[in-house]
Image 1 (spheres, rainbow over the protein chains, first blue to last red):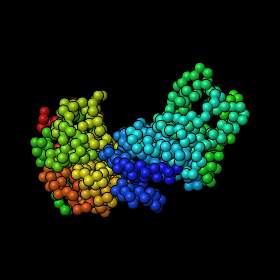
Image 2: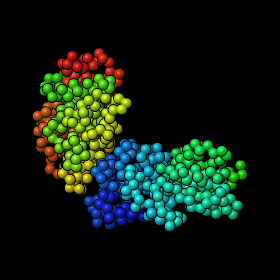
Image 3: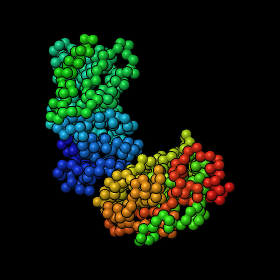
Image 4: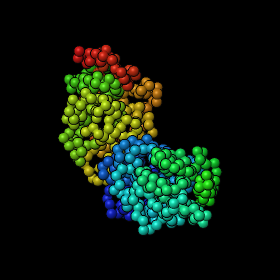
Length: 308
Length: 284
């Protein structure tokens, strides 16, 4: 997904002189072709992310569209003040591409695990947050990122994630995508957790539970209308995210549901990371499993809610 | 202007002495703003007056009737809390009516305690220190990349230079040889708590900027002639960004405010205090 995203920046930049790429201290050879063909629009500015965000804001105020790329934690945690003031208060067209959303960097430990990036970005006015499920969805999204007004945070997954999105479904920023429909339960996902939900829904259908899967590649602005429409007929609602349960997709959905005041109460559960720093290394998959982010646990959670 | 460092004691001594009518008039306008809002960073604004006056009177290209004129020089007051001095200059030049100054910090005013881009003539919203220079680097880098002819001027405070982001931006400006960028430091030797020498000493300040790849010049920041000369000789060194270290007095022009930490920021300013401030400026 990262390769696809950066390659898209290159492709888009070839046809749009407003587009710039700014990296911090990325891997050797990153976007080499971009650098060779458009050297005046390729910047590798070193390990000074705060300056990079401010500089990108300045260039955006002058009409450029900078795509800034580094590890997600260094963008969202270190540069919070710059993102709030320089990007969001000025509402400029800077695109932040965060490598390693969620537990991608499991072997590298908590300093590199972007487990609260969505919560951080969600709290800032004017910010748009996008977390595609796979590289194909990224391809559909990236052209829309060029002229979208205001800053965007693009959350990248690991790469080589299985393709689970549907080719014919156009991407629309701010719109959820119904992957399958069912009237018993609603499973809402973002990023790569869509894949887990698809497997879970299949298992559920074998048990006679028909689930709707609502994929939310845009977390902010949240497609509240889709949440409310799809939540209305079902009994159980589960959100699934590779992110702390505080302040992310689950919280966003909970806020909408809490104010919906349905006549019949809903059963609701957030699946995500608990409010702790991950205490193991291993891989993204093993760490996700440790915190219950598996298709089996989604299945079990939906069944439990349906029983209650 | 001098090649050797100038220390605060050598700057023309306190109060109004050495200030001409224009400098006094601008200070009176600042105190009138304070009177309207009954609050503000008065001392931080007073040390900036001559710097801004020379920039707007003699140095920068701009069109008050067309604040977004593409060829305008870009100006960022990174030490946003000094905004009363900026507002007074912008009104003086016609970016907005002088009557607007009387709305300072009021509910529907465009003029708050830190400048925002909704104010005609303000390029960047500032107030969180350490941001303006990076934005200015972006402006200057864009000018280079787009072959645009505007210059970028960023005023930072001395306390603001405590921020690491300032030095990140300095490295970046130097790397890109931004000779179209000038950093102006209001080196009044005082920050909120007290003396910069006690809170976080910046010395050897000029050498730091030289090491970071800047052409450096030091001036008496209240001497209009010195300032003009420094600005006319930009860039200080060919192929490098410039820094003009302006040795100033915090609160310059009003004796009871000068170097007095109580006046870094004040709210609920009383009639008695205002009377004294105006009296110091010889207006009763």
